[in-house]
Image (cartoon, rainbow, N blue to C red; front, top):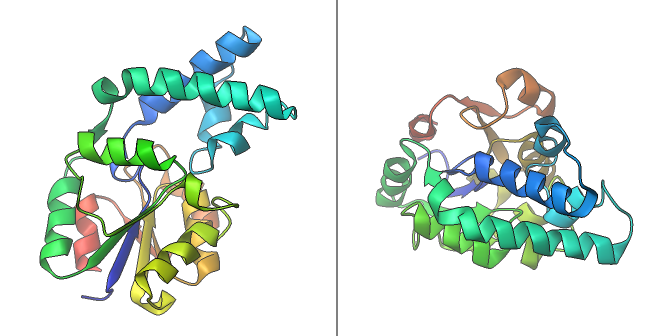
Length: 211
C-alpha cells in the first residue's frame, strides 16, 4: 500500500447525507428567521462545524446555540430514513482493512451523530479513530482535526492520505502535511475543488485502492 493510514471525511465522502443536511438547514432557517436561503449558502459551509455555519446568520451566541439545537433535533428525527452510504464505499473500506490499513474519520459532525451515521451506513466498527467536532477547538479548514487524528494514530503525515469532498477537507489535509484526495462523487464538482489543490482525484470510492 502507498499509505498506512487512511483518513476519511464523513458527509459527502462516505455517506450521502446532503439532502438531509440541506433540509435541516432550511428547516432551521424557517423556524428562526421565517425565510429561505438558496442551497448554495449552505453548501459553502459543508465540512465546517455547525456553529461556524450558523455564525454566518447571527453573531449572538444564544441565537447560534438555539439554531444548533433546532438543526440537530430535525436532523436526528429524519436521519435514518435519509442517510445511506455511497455506492462502493462499504466494499472499499473493507478492502482497505483487509490490506492492513489503519482507518480514521475526520468529521465536523458531533461524535454521537457521526457514530450514528456510520452505523446506518453499515460502517460501524470499521474505523480505529474518529475525530469529531467535539474533539477540537478549531474545525476544518484548520488542520487541527487532521493533526489530532495523526497524534491518535501516532503516525507521520507522510504515511497518511485524507479523502474528502469539500475544499475545507482538502485545505485542512494540505495544511497538516498529509496527502489529500478529492472525492468528486459528493456535492462539489472538480472545478469547485481545484482551487484547494488536492494531491489526487477520485472519481469513485474504489479508486482509492489504486493509489
